[in-house]
Length: 484
Ligand SMILES: Cc1cc2nc3c(=O)[nH]c(=O)nc-3n(C[C@H](O)[C@H](O)[C@H](O)COP(=O)(O)OP(=O)(O)OC[C@H]3O[C@@H](n4cnc5c(N)ncnc54)[C@H](O)[C@@H]3O)c2cc1C
Image (cartoon, rainbow, N blue to C red; front, side, top):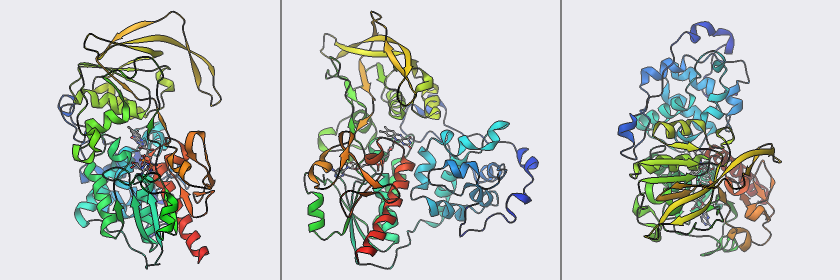
């Protein structure tokens, strides 16, 4: 088992009666009834009760080291030890244990695709229900925050100033670690508030925004300064930041440009880009850039195009905005969908229908000039591409019409090239992703500039961005020490 400062199981797996543990009945994750939850944007999950948490954690059979759940977690959270603490009711210690390897446990516990990571690797899946690792992490971290608050331990001041560009999961986690190392941190964020896609993408019914603002307040309390509406590359460059006395810069600007479809009619009124749709539907208007401070106009029949997490979020946002018929158009089959299965199941529960092997090729306007029809073509799956995914191939002459009054394009994201273009010596590739020459530190080709998160990997996950921010903080700390 990984080492930790919190007491772990004495005798490790030897003392565990696995049969007895397997007989503890599994808890179920409670969600609010569909008919009620689609009327608002509040959290759909009903938090665990302390007694249920103890019982659920007691089901952990404590696999021999290395436990598959620890290996599958990108942060390598010491999940078995946390389960051991939770089953004894030592919730605050369990929360502390998660904080040793994660800067955003309240957030990752709610948004990670657990079924593909820790929970998906739980050995109980062979015969029994897997442990609800995410729900337990969410329970203890919220419990500990309510009971004892959360304090970030600040390191001995080093007198070094570090700039962070972008206040998404990567930037926030980098800041969280750098203050613990004693550095002075200023975060420059182009939007009116911090959180990145945690606020301007992932809907409130999945991740309540106050959880993100609580993390930002934690950082502010220990002296991290946030400068909002600062679009680096335009308002100031990275060179300007060095000239202002920052000794290192972390770039965590994500990939926020929606991929276009390049089909006729995609500029019609009623056709939205996913990010704009989600931001305008879900975010308090005062937290939006001024030009986006109005709700999207959603009709009764909405089509969402795409198969990722963003598509699931749009499908689930639509009924909350008043849509009565919600359909997902996806060019491959469900098997190839990149989005998390759990989110898709929730979308189905909330009424989303799926039409697979379907590709819109044109949007037609109605008499009022708004989109009224999506002209689609049928697809079949052809040979696998370079990544082994079977390529969708259009069936000639198979065009058909889907009646719609609103369309949301959730087709993926591209990086914003502005940082690469305005930073001499910073190498980029693939339309603007930042080249990292050392993956363990996030060091880029420009000395003193580090990067991590989606702007390096392309669109990925909150937990991977969080881990990248932490690794870069360690890289920056070493760089500053060596520089001295
Ligand atoms: C709709 C949607 C739903 C998702 N759902 C999930 C999910 O359920 N689970 C999951 O694990 N992942 C999910 N993801 C992916 C996840 O949100 C991202 O992988 C993660 O947020 C990446 O973190 P990041 O810090 O690299 O970038 P971001 O979160 O994109 O943050 C980048 C920040 O940098 C700012 N910025 C950009 N350019 C500049 C600049 N030039 N100057 C200053 N600031 C700048 C941006 O405004 C933003 O605040 C989802 C993504 C989307 C789009």
